[in-house]
Image (tube, rainbow, N blue to C red; front, side, top):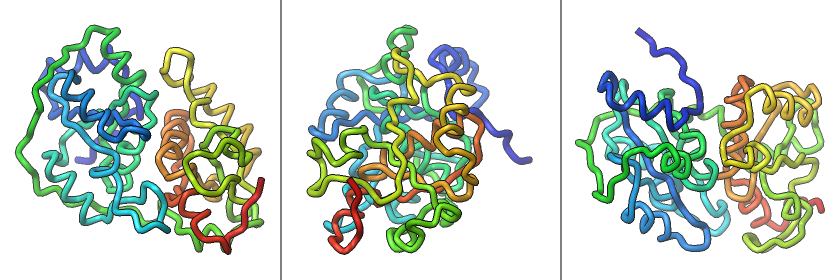
Length: 286
């Protein structure tokens, strides 16, 4: 029997109530990470994490090898991500909850990757680590482990666009509407510290991913998110919408916010600006 769809987000209180029932195989995954200090998330995990949670490292587990031209966080190859999923012990009946301490910035990447891989029973902890602590959820310092599984992923190739596809559709609003999740200054080509070139892909619209959040780090209500995205898209057909950011990470936050708003699945240009600007022949707008 097919599983029922679940909400993209789960609150700390809902998770606390669900875990003791043992009526489902829950898997919690800590995705804390710091782009400026790539060991910081793992260190934080060792100092304390949601009891029973595994740790997922953005570079090792949620990204593939960098070539210098494929972006700062390229998608992992399907076979590599399948191995990672199996090492986490994910089964068809597992319920995954991802969290971080950055408003879902990194947890959203895992949420998207699992769904791209054909696994639907995944949620992001709304408010993340801070919300868990505020709700006085159980915390542990011991590294968790699970028996490996034989889970087979089923990648949804149509969910991802390559650079050449984005380039071919530039200037054709009936075929492609790009949404850039970076901060407005970086979108304008100002204060660029992550990539060697400042600016954005021509024609892109800016939706800073942090606009999805309330001051307390939780997501805005679904109806508010829906209204904001519909205003941004200005009646553009959903099958034309393509998300990108600097390296394909925070773009997943906008994908998560749209899912929480009840909007249809849209696509990801995973290489994003860091891949785009690595080729000087590609056009840049400022």
